[in-house]
Amino acid sequence: MDHDDTKPSLASLLMRSTELKRALVDFAVSPRYERHLARFMEEAGHHGRVLPEDEAINGIDRFALQHRMPGGGTVLSRFLASRPDLTAPDREMLHGWAEPVEGIFEICRKDRDSLVLLNLIDDLEYRAYSNVGPSVFRPLPLRGYVLARLVPIRPVPDVWLVSGTMSAYPESDAAQIAEAALKLAMRLPELVYRNPKSLERGWKQMREDRAAFVEFFGRDEVVLPPAEAEERLNAYYRHREEATLARQPARHRRRNLPGVDVPAFKFPPDLAGADTVGMIYDETDGLNFYSEYGMLRELFADAALAAGKPYADVLMGYLREATIGPLPFRRLAAAHPDTADQVFRQALRQPRFTWAEHGETLMRRRKPWYYKREPRPGFTVIGARLSELLGRQPGQAAPDSTRRS
Image (spheres, rainbow, N blue to C red):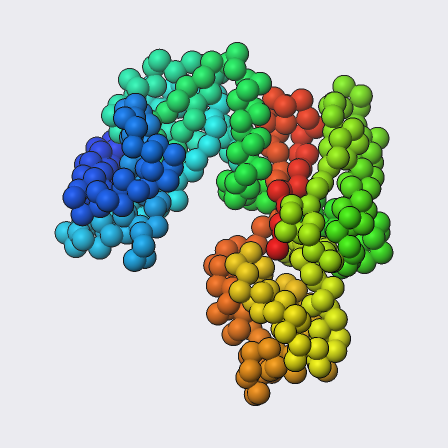
């Protein structure tokens, strides 16, 4: 059997990771970044207080690996740029640290030198090592839980390194741990969708919910006064929850279900104070809410309105607003091909503007964030183990917090 003796062993990679991490941390806490680190810690809620060692270590770890610097890049990327002496394997390992896996993990098994962890957020297993040795794992409770951050040990596949410190919890804390995992999954659904199966289930759930929305409202785009929109939306959510309840055994039903026992949805002040709210349930962008969408639809139906300041202000507000993506512009331009060019020409004061030729460029310039992210479902799928701990049916999905504009 042939062996590739040039490949580094896992033991040598762990040893090298210790050296690289020490160098990276020294770089991150150097005088060059002292001011940026202090601001980062303050914005993280530490406000200059003396931190316990584990909090300080984890704060520095996040700063070094993920914090975006004002001039661009991260501390990690700048460290890589400052070290032309690093070998290709060193660089491969460090590049892998740019996207840590953050999660709440159940300890499935303790092996001689590693842990097998199940991430309650993405429902995936991880074999984790420590670059300070396996003794750090001995005090951890078997079948207990840890809050941790993991980075890959490249180029070895499917092995991970604990980055920063771990917080451990006993098995008896399962209920509180499950609720914390659910809140984290809802707040940061991108953590859930590391799992391709969860991503697939999320898209499936959103397609089903969109079909139900269209059946309930009669279309996928609705414009109503806020109070009426809120009432209809609550009726829709109640209808969906009741349909879900009807399919569940009584033992899985929870009290105080949103949309059944308590109000499910209330618009925030900026939407509640508008004359109209637009609700668009798109196949890709999901369900979004838009303030004064009625005015925008009137504008595209009658381009002469662009000469009036109120209508021009609404359009320019949509273009400037950081939370509004290209969806409403694409919808209205497609619905009003005869007037869309004139609307943009008048509002932008660009007499040669055409949506077909310049629309996508305008969107990319005004909405760059939209093109930098991968589309994801508007639902957060709960994995099998977390569902079990929460007393839910496996594979249930929950809507993300409202996408509003």
